Image 1 (spheres, each protein chain N blue to C red):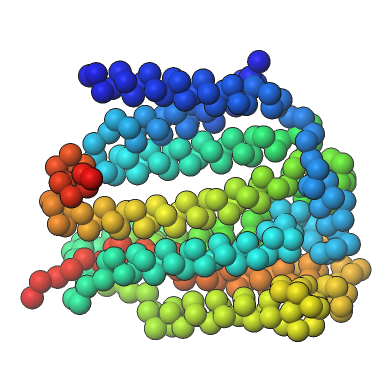
Image 2 (image 1 turned 90 degrees about the vertical axis):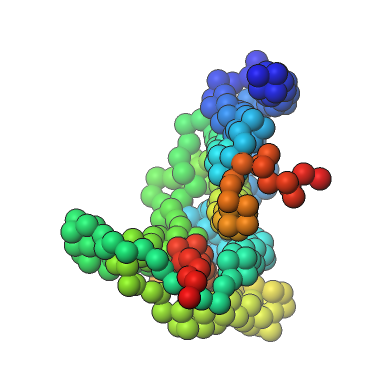
Length: 235
Length: 114
């Protein structure tokens, strides 16, 4: 009881402290400094309509590479922590008829929707990370519905490694052509899709990078799901 | 005076912190961490909001002066992904602890004491 009271008192102190800090930050005011520059120049500099995507992939593309690396390390860490010699799924009951039928009907569309999200990242809200997560939910659905289902491990591991290298490769091609890592040569040098801004075939290399990120996130989250679902079986 | 719109985010952070401080079950502490994370993300996005403006997608009718701040949204996009990854890591550590000790109560897991 005393511990709980102490916790509540310290929470109130912390809450008061955060509120004090935020009291000088008015809600809904225009405080943009560098963001205004991004908003003003995003169309001619990157060809993307969605400014968030342009910041994530173009202006801060190196950050995103680090983020993908963090995700990769986390997925590897989960695999290393849950590593066992004999791993199987021990679930005995199949999903109900509603779940299995629904899965059969919905899985292609869920995957298609994920692909839509990451291909249209430069036009609509979304991008590689939500798209990849959507694709991973399709695999989770398969795991829940069918006890015998396994993701194709070999293909997934190869895809994961290949798209990781593809990201670095795109960056290095930019380094070779334009002089810095992740230089958007498709937009800056070729001017691909200049008359096309706001349609699918524009946005420089954003759709390419987001396809890479989407595939990587999808395979990695599916691998995490696979590692967590399986249990050790004793012989 | 502090704006009422920040209270949701602050209270989410405090609810998560309460769970981390008081609860003894590891899973509940992890849920508390996730709630805290949601609160921080909400706080960042709401700081980037500009009254009367639209999402930073510069399509028809939305020019550079009618969009909210896109940088917090990009940062939160990053933070959400990192949060998912760290939560997955922590959950697998919790699974291993449960296998080793047969419990998730942090007071019974002796090795966790310094």
